[in-house]
Length: 392
Image (tube, rainbow, N blue to C red; front, side):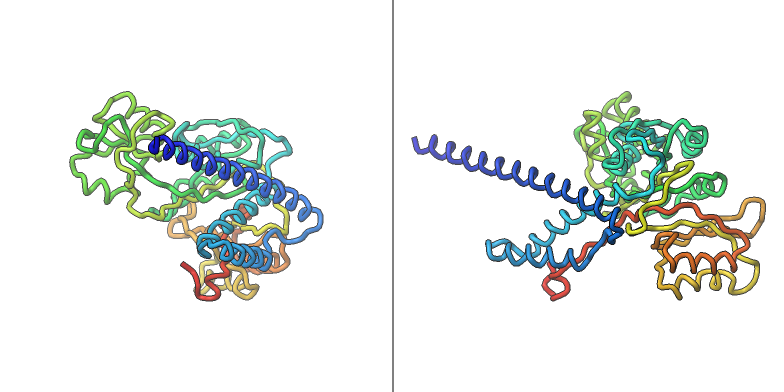
């Protein structure tokens, strides 16, 4: 009888937890909807999307109320930082650069279901459009050409990774096309070895996109019995692992393994735990984002062939207090030993300080092209505990 009572008590407690979880989700969705209304109001009034003082006040009240309820302050702050980030991302989706007015769009990306591009594109365009039609392509150039031909409104390509750096082919395609950067997305990559096998000992061949294999070099070196094979995409790697059976596996994410009904044979194949890929969304034309949105502007330029030319070209950004987020160089086509520079700076292109810096850059450069202006994806959280030395 006592055992039955204990089981019933456990079921009752778990039912209570489930009900509380449903209420948390309902309130989270309600908070997100209020954030969308706030974005619309800010778009009309021109008020800044990000108000860090307001965020600090929200965090301070939450931490104080949580402590009164016996909750650990750092955990409460992390929870509310996540809620604030969700709200900011929803507001950015409503105010970001946009190709066309339709609520549906077509997006060309590398590979198909299960590829990292697939999951990153889903995350990026969620909230921007009601429906997204994938236009699957096998290489970066065909993605760009699909947008140029009107087969897709957007091309979605990886441009850099925190482990392997910039993707040269994508930078070269930017040199060779007239498309506009209309957005960015930072996707956390968690490489796994996935397949039909129950253990790594049964696997002899691992398929992966060259970037995925390059980001897993040390893991593969620790398992010399594994033979690496390059394929065009993570989707193709998954297909081959399905077709060939337990002796073959793929480098892909855990979500892809679930999608294909395969096992996660090794959960940590990354050389670096903090492995992010930055994607860009390319369009033929895009309306500028709201000026009150935290933005990036990307430009491409070439300097005069004289000492100090690059320093002169960039000095105005320092003088205007504008942060440079990225500077990448690539060989100029048809001009041996000359370089083109790709620059991302943190400002809307129509911000007065940015316009002055761009005028100075134009005067110092012999060639200049604005690649795009779009909402900045990375949102650095504020912390009230860290300010008072109480962070975890």
